[in-house]
Image (cartoon, rainbow, N blue to C red; front, side, top):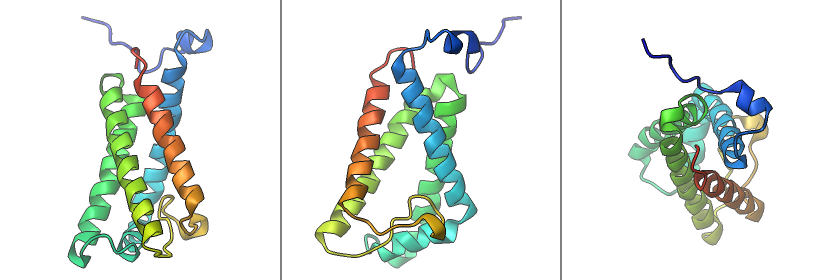
Length: 152
């Protein structure tokens, strides 16, 4: 019987044998896993933020919210816990961030003052601004940096 490769090899992690891209990918995965869990716990808040952005017809809002939440959770889960699917999960998360950034940019250009539903809870919601774009571009750059690693 063949021995399975562990998800995280703690000997290598402690000795810092993994490249920096690996750690950036794990941080991004944990970040998106936490965010997607808060969205899943409060799906109506995320759907409301999608509705208020006026970017899609009303009948599609709930379907899009459920699709984005579930896709984000599955991709983040793959990045953190599934070594075989880590690169695919990073590509999906990067694609979602590009879509989210495009939505924010569109609303800023149209002067629609809406609330960012990124964190899924009323307590942490803030109106979109240029800083939201800066934060999203920083996450996109970190994702591209993590994808350049060959050992991911």
